[in-house]
Length: 272
Image 1: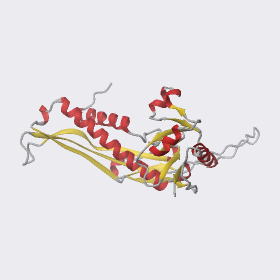
Image 2: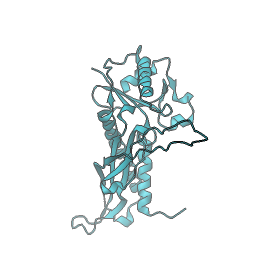
Image 3: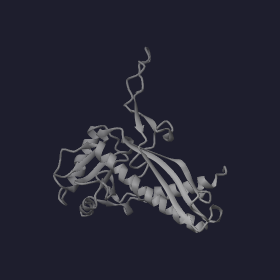
Image 4: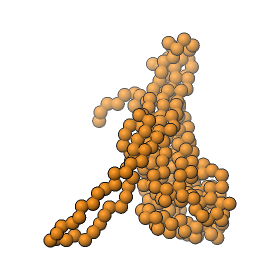
């Protein structure tokens, strides 16, 4: 395995904590398919379309079809930093325990920020359901089935669908006879962070959906998350700063963005 720098190791540790704390995880809620360098300020995502499938003629062959060449630009609109002073220690003398604590805290803080921003993009750019009647214990399953039908009508893949719900709606789901607990579904579901499954949706609980939003139904192919370290995490000596003597700081900058690329694949359920 290739040697990595200390800065790369620190950044990896923050990212590991970030991934473990995220509710809206990569590969589960968002895909990471894009082309370009996020540090340049924008990347591109190819707008997907259905491939042409026809009957093959052994005598005459087949007509050529052309894949979609339409691209969606994602502007990198978030730039977050870590810049925590470690007083009393020069960069080469900071105890590993203090660095580890700061990295752990940074990962947790970034996860909370990415969750909030990711949820905001799903709610803002997804398709708002016309149904504004609040969930009840009696109707929660039927409303999940309605969302399933809508996504199927919009040709959204069946496997991998998710539902992000508020704590109040999750409480109703728990009381539903149709709910399957994650413990009964095996390790693969538990590892996604899903709390269970209902009507074909893996269920996730979030308190970041915003006012009057009860649930978001979708598929990871319909929204993209871009994130990268613009400045990898490192311990910076502040001795030459002109202000600090015998101090250092844990520093780094992460740039990221979220984009719903297929609004019909993200259904936002609000209540009146």
